[in-house]
Length: 275
Image (cartoon, rainbow, N blue to C red; front, side):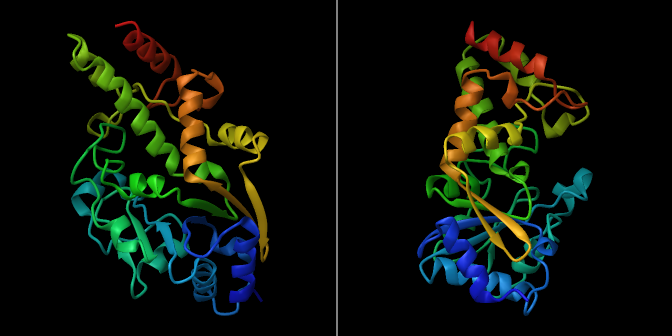
């Protein structure tokens, strides 16, 4: 039976300290039996960061994808893991008000992290313009250098890859905004409004990013119950993604998909660089 203390100790072995902000991607069942179910896990995480720390979970809504912007409420179910949905209902938890990529948070920085989401600094991109805006929890967590923890899941689950993708596309669109081709170039970017059209997007291969980070000694590992734990700094992850994209390292791109295309993306980037 996994106890609160064992959860805390497993996070301490990752390098989690009092006052840290942590974002958890998780598979609850990977942990095995716990003393008091999900409560044990959450309390162990709270204890690891202390009263000055913050625990954050992604509370994404993707099952109702076609209608998510129409049907979203703050009480919408999170469909990215049992712990995420359980956590959002707890007393003292704040949740950001955004349909596709909300987060829920508890602790010292919880209200700050979740208070705004998509109200300003919107960024054009695949899931709509609000998920990874400049006032989003994702930008705030990046600036806080939140530690991203993976409980029984791989780094391919890292939502910060989309934050990096959005920022990268924003950078290139800004380079092109004074060009006569700007609207044409913008229309090529894969976007929620025309979801079924194959388009430009730097869809990141997180497994490759993980290999790069491991080679640099920036991935930390531990064990909790039956689950392997991984941890990476949000800044290390995002900055590494950005560096690989800037270098046009083809390995950082995921393979072609029906709604994004690597060759189109590389051509688009080159065209803007040559403006």
